Amino acid sequence: MLTRNNLTNALLETYNLMRCYHTTWYGKNFDGLDPWQGQGRILTALRRMHSVSQKELGKVLGIRPQSLGELLQKLEVNGYITRYRSDTDRRALIVELTAKGETFQLRKPNYDEMFIDLNAKEKATLKNCLEKISERLNELIERENEDEFY
Image: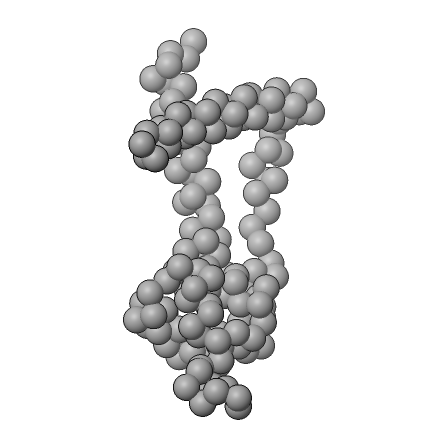
């Protein structure tokens, strides 16, 4: 029987293994660029925006200009983006994906493989349990955030 501590540990272990799989897969397939942070987050945003000024990109992502410039320089060196001066405003730098950058995240890890050993009933039960846990976590987050505004 799982105690509260064992259940929490089991969930955290699963979470850590999922992150490890995610990191390993992106490391193998996209030079370690994670679509949710750093350079990978920039590429993910650029796939939606296609062509944007460096200043606007920084605003959208909430990244300081100096930090953004460093990340973009790395992406440019590795062939994921190109930057050039705007024709209409020579002070503005336009950022665009290259062909290599366009391929980022066209393929994604198959997370469904982790459920392969579960039957339909087990999958439904797990989904139900995770939904209940998510609802409770949202309530806990809301409760913690209530104090921030007073």
